[in-house]
Length: 433
Image (tube, rainbow, N blue to C red; front, top):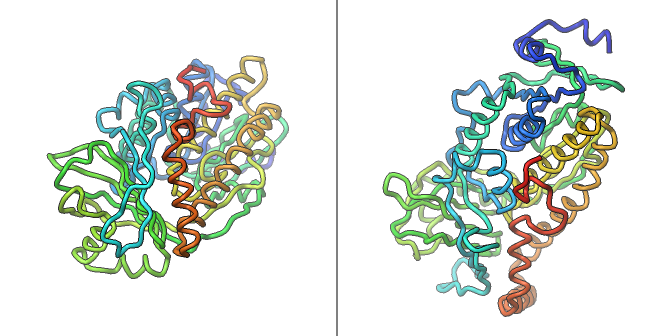
C-alpha cells in the first residue's frame, strides 16, 4: 500500500478530498456518475449529516449537463419516488414526470388487425400516489448532480485508474494520478464494470440475442397517463407516457427486437422506420412522429458472483442486469443504493467505519436474493412472451385472463412493481436515514 501511495501525484480529486478534515474511515469514493452512483453519493451525504466525505469519479461529469441522451426515459416506481423525495430531488423533476395512471397488456401478432386488452391495472398504490412515473434520464441525472453539489459531494470529472484495498483503507488512484485514501470504494460503473474486474469478482450471464430500441415519440392525441405493453412474437413493445412539451403529446417506446432484425430496422430511412414503429405503436393516439433518434442497446441477463469484497461494493448494473420487460432495472439499482446507504450510515452511528465488513455483508445478504428473484422472473417472462407457439400463447393468455379477474392478485402485482413489498429500506418508505 505504501508503494502505491508514493507513485501518485496530487490531482484535483486529491486536493478536494484533502480540504476536508475527515479521516479515511469516513470517506467514500463512488465510481460512476450515472443515476445509481449519484443517488448513492447523495444518500450518504444527506444521511451522514455532513460527517462523511463523498467523491464521485466519472469522466462524463466534465459535460456541462450530465446526461445528454434525450431518447432515454425510465420508470420510477413509487418506492424509488419516495426515496428521491426524501433526498430532496423529486421536487426538481416532478413537473416533468408523467404519472402512469393505468397499464394495459395485449398479446397479439404484428399483423393482427385488433389487439384486445387481456389484462389491465389501475395505477395507484395509495389514493393519489401512482405506482410509477416516467422521467427522462437527462432530467433526473441533472437534478441528482445539482443536489450532490449542494450537499457537498465532490464531483471529479475523471475515471479511476486503479485501487488497492487494505485492512484499514482503500487507496484509489484517479486517471490524473491523484490519490484518495478512503474507507470504501463503490463501483456504479455499469454492466461492463472495470472496477468489478479489478476486484476479481466474476460475472454469470448470457445475451438474449435481442436488442432494446428506445426513442421518444410524438402523437396527435393525449395518452391520458396510460402505459401499454404489446407482447409481440419478437418481444414486448412498450409505450410509456411522457409529459407534454412544446405543445406535443409524447411517449417513450422500449421496443424489444431480435438483434438481426434490429440491425436492419435501424438502417432504414427515417420515414420507413417511422412506419415500422407505427405498425407496432398502433393508431389509438393518431399520427406519430419520431422526436429523437432511435437507439439500440443489447439485452442480457447477468449477476455478479459477489456484491462486496474488502472495502469494495457493487451497486446497480455493475452488480446485476435484467431484461427491461418489467421496467425494473433502474428501480432495483436504486434499491441497492437505499440498502447500502442504510447499512453504512447505521454502521457509522455505531462507531464503525464506512467500509465495515459486517455492514457490507449485510448489504449483500439483503440484495442478492431479491436481484436473483427479479432476474429469474424477467427471464421467465421474456421466454414466455417472446414465443409464437400456439399452445404457449393459449396458456399465457389464460393465465393473464385469470389475473384480470382477481383484484387481490392485481393489487399484489402493482405493489410489487411499485417496490413496496418485502423488506422495504427506509429511504423507499419515505423515511430519512
